[in-house]
Length: 160
Image (cartoon, rainbow, N blue to C red; front, side, top):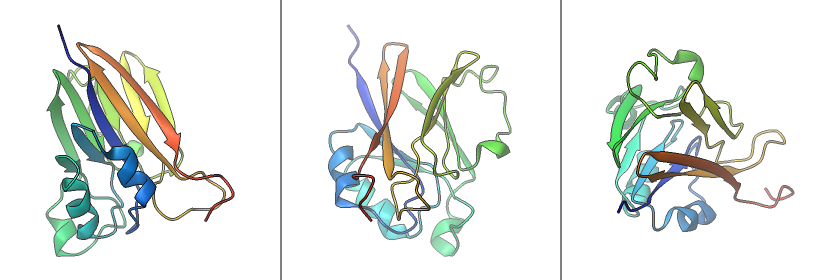
């Protein structure tokens, strides 16, 4: 009997880790950050909740960010997740590589999409509001070879 694994997906915090995001991520077995983190303290706070895999975003600069890779391949619950900031820079064929999930950020637009047997997830932006885009976060469930994901609004659309 397999147990369900919940993985928290967050991106584009840009130096702001909201209390709502931390509350949402509690109970996750792992957290994946899709880049544009903003500050090393964000990763430290997330690591206090669960193990973290993070990639460098186009706005992540400095010695702390230099330690991050542009892409990460992580194996959780028998599934491979490929993490990168900008989907336009996808440099592998996920299906051929045996990747079940591609996690990105960058656009600030939340999206969950199945294409050619691969689940693509952008949890949107959990940091400062940008334009009229929602403030969102995501979660991925791994259940014995079955994958499902969703994004969730953290704030009322009229909040800051």
